[in-house]
Length: 242
Image 1 (cartoon, rainbow, N blue to C red):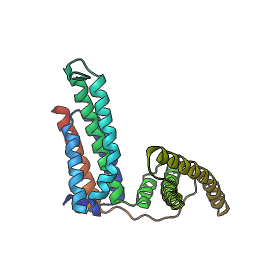
Image 2 (cartoon, rainbow, N blue to C red):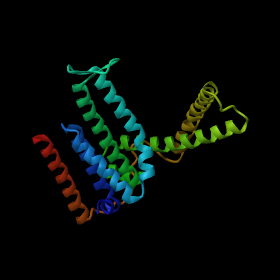
Image 3 (tube, one colour):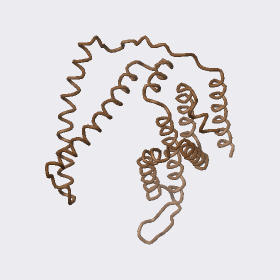
Image 4 (cartoon, rainbow, N blue to C red):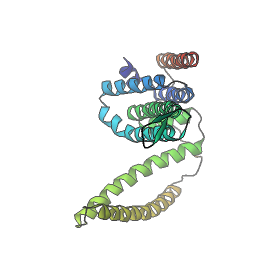
């Protein structure tokens, strides 16, 4: 059932519940509740057939969480565990694993939101919640630019390799990456300036309102959203008294 609810839930409810869950996760004092949320996100991604995309996107938050765990374990606390070379602190491991679980759970919720909701729906939901127009416009531009730059970078890499650029050895790969990055940044400036001029010539200006009619929320979505928020509050209460 969670997979069907996630797939059919209104984007506005998804955005609100996701934001509420992430705020709650950052306030939790025990690691096992965020890990439970992460496990639930994995189950939902399995049910929706999004496992491959989910694990690709969760790699970076996972690595970042492990890095934080290692730093905390090596530098924070008083009770030492002597492994011979580098001392590890028990308090640091406990607190580091708590941060790791928070990072992983928050990233899992966001990734699931991105995989089940289109970018336009997210932006329209932000507009419906009366988010500042500047934030919406910046978010829209960032999404488009990141996608464009990613595609442009792949094309430049293929073009670079097709012209017999060496792709063996760390030094050659680093040189290729630096050359592609420099060319990509140069193109980014020229394209962004041209895009801005084209938008201004077509009547765009900051704060421009778009006459888009958004349908009202369904009662079933409202009730489901209330139930999810109530469940999150209940989980936070259990965590607080545990």
